[in-house]
Length: 452
Ligand code: ATP
Image: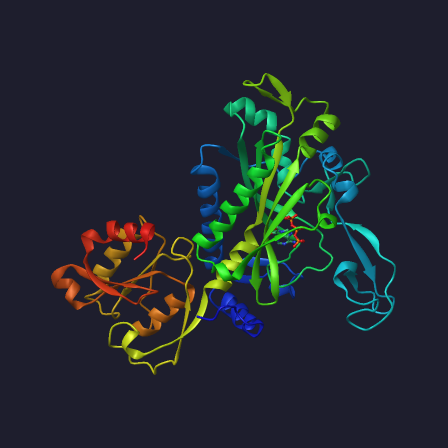
C-alpha cells in the first residue's frame, strides 16, 4: 500500500467522489458556489458513520460524558463574552492590481501570489457570518451564525449540571454546523465556510487540567488510528506560545498527512476557565461549580477536543484509497466475462465507517436466483446498511463494491437454491466462506464488531 496519497491522485479522488455519489459541488447546475460541497448518497452515509463512531466513543461509552444539541443562532452577547467579536479575525491583505484577497500569514512574499502585484497593508477581517434576525435589517437586529459549537455548551453549563447532577470531572459533547467566512477556503472539503464540528468541553478541577489535556490528546489520537488511519500519516503538533488562541493555555493539534501536506484534523486545547468566567461576567449568571468534597465554589477548567467532521471524513476517505494489482484468481468467483483490469481500485474504509456494509449480489440476473437473493437482501437490511446489485457481470459488481469500500459481499448462486448457503467475501483479505443464510446476520454482526 502507498504510504501517502500523492497530490496527483487528488483528481482521481475528486472524480470517484462525484461518479459514485460521495461529494458533489454545491449548486453545480448554477456553476457551483465556491468551496461549498454537498454529500451525495454514499457520502452522507460515510459522514453519518463518522459522527456515529465519534458519538459512541466520546458520549455513549463514557460515564463522564453527556450530549447536547444547541441552536446555531445565539444571543449576540455570547460572541462578545467569548471574545469572538474582538479576536476572531485573520489578517487580510489585498492585491492592488487584481484585488484578490489573501491571509497575510499564508503569502510568502510582499507580492501577490497570482499576479505579482503589490499587496496592501494587513487589516483584521472578522470571520463570523453576520445576518439579521426578524423582518428588519438594521443594527441591533444583527446576529451571527456560530463559528464554533463550543459556546452552546458553555452557556448551558448550569442547565446540564442541574439536570444531570454530574460531578467534576465530566464533559459535554456536541456535533453541529459552524460557519466561518474564511478568506482562503480550499483543498476540497478541508477548508470551507460551512462545516460541521464534533466538540467536547470537558470540565475539570483547576490543577488537574494539564493531566486531562494529555489524556484527551491520547484518547483522540488513538480514535483516528482505531478507525483505520495509518499511524505514520498522523502526527501531534503542539502550538507555539505566539500561536495560541486568545482563550488557550496550551494546545495540541492532531494533523493528517494530506496529499498537499500536513493539515489539522482536530485541536485539543486547555481553555482554562476563560469561557465560564467571561459568561459569568457578561450574563450576570453565576457559573461556578460547588465542589461538595472541598466545600468550595470555583470555575472549572476546560479541556476542549474540537474536531471537524468534514476533515475527518476526508482523511478517512483518502487514507483508505488504494490501487492494487488485480490477479484474476483473487477476483471473486469465475464467470466474469469482462476483460480483466490490471488494477483493483479498493477503498479500505474501516468496516464501521463504510457507507455500505453488505452487498447482496446474485450470480446473474437469472429469475431462479432473484427471489432467494431478494430474501437474503430483506433479511440483511434489517441489521446492516445493505445494497442489492444485479446489474452487469459479477466481476464488475465486486469492483464497484470494492471502490466504495463495502466490507462484505454476499453472493447467491445456483447451489444456494439447494443448500441454502451463500458465499461471503471479505474485501481486504479476499477470503471467501460459505455460510447458511440462517447464520448470516449473527456471523456478520460478529465480523463487524471484531473483524474477519
Ligand atoms: P485552521 O487553523 O485549519 O483554520 P482552526 O485551528 O481555526 O483551524 P479550530 O478553531 O480549532 O480550527 O476548529 C476545530 C476544528 O474544526 C478544526 O480542527 C477543523 O477540523 C474544523 N474546522 C475549522 N475550520 C474549518 C473550516 N473552515 N472547514 C472545515 N473544517 C474546519
